[in-house]
Image 1 (cartoon, one colour):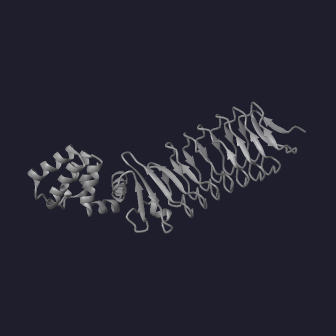
Image 2: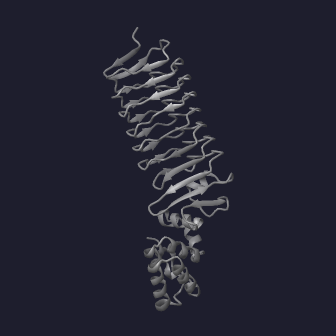
Image 3: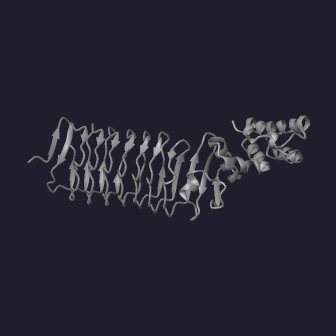
Length: 317
């Protein structure tokens, strides 16, 4: 009996024959649903060049599987493809992969060093659930969606870096007990939240940014909390962030000075109480921001006493 059943380039079934190391034959383009499901003797799989798709439950419950080598041709990993591969330690994910199906790597408890593909656009729900050896994840720029509970119970996960446009549900990263840092990358700024044990995923991904549960913000500028509020107000039109900035206009003005953001400083001027204008001009001089100094000085001479209660919406680009 042949080791593989292959029809028109589709590897339909692997007949387990006691081999520990399996090499997929040339000419295969798809590894079909459940093709290797429950093959308990396999330790490693080398996938041949030309394979584009790994089907649903293709390697589900391959309990001894430790290593998988993919070619660059792979574009899709199906639902539960490696579910319950509890000894899987090493897998390369080529940059051509665009989709990782739900539960694809669920319960891969020894999987630790994951590099998500550059062209990845979708991570299904529970894709990496219970992968409790993963320590750090950087979400690629092209990713459009992360499903619910994608990284649930990844207890060693300490850091995740997220591009600002990614659609992420509030339950995408619940119950990661050791998560310490989440970085959000935006158009003008990059901020990193340091998470306390009381911070919930909802606090972060619903952008409840001024909550006392967020104990500390670490970022590239000294005015960390202001940077985060500015980022969320500008990028997401977040009301709590806007209110926070409006009630802390001195810190906001100093932050805009630090950023040398003359455009937004000009829009923000009506929010500044006139009695603090000299303090802000001095700050611009001390920080060597001549363009900001000129804007503030002109405001002092031409608009001193202007109503500081103008709408904050003028501040947003």
